[in-house]
Length: 207
Image 1 (cartoon, rainbow, N blue to C red):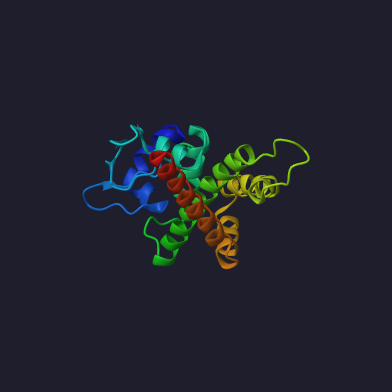
Image 2 (cartoon, rainbow, N blue to C red; image 1 turned 60 degrees about the vertical axis):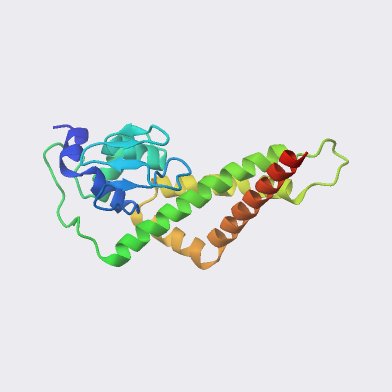
């Protein structure tokens, strides 16, 4: 069997979803990580998923590829590494267990949180760079435009690093981002921007 077929046989969608931080109740319905989902709309079966909200669908490899922004081949390699499955057909590495301790699951939850914050913040910085760009060189620079210029490359690098680094490197970086308050700070920026959007929307409705 190819590595794709091996992974589909050895790793269920529920196992992969829980492995990467999603909480999946017995019903298999959970909040979709691919759009802003307030009510569970993602159905996870053993071998395929479907979101009733955004229409995303596929197998365990498609799910992993979309979750981490990878190609199907890269997603297959990631699953093989994370679940201790050899990339060579018919071979399975030893020492990997699908039964992980609680602290391991917390690490995956922390990783999922960081990825979501970094992705949303990167999009926000991109918006700020356009929205608050000075009309002329003589204008005073908006702090948000300055932040977008200074931080965009770093956030993009962190996202790329969390995609391609080893588990140990990812855990170390995530622990540092949580410990120094970076993630909390970016979450606050996102929350403040959402408040500002709601305020502008209300003003538009009144006008």
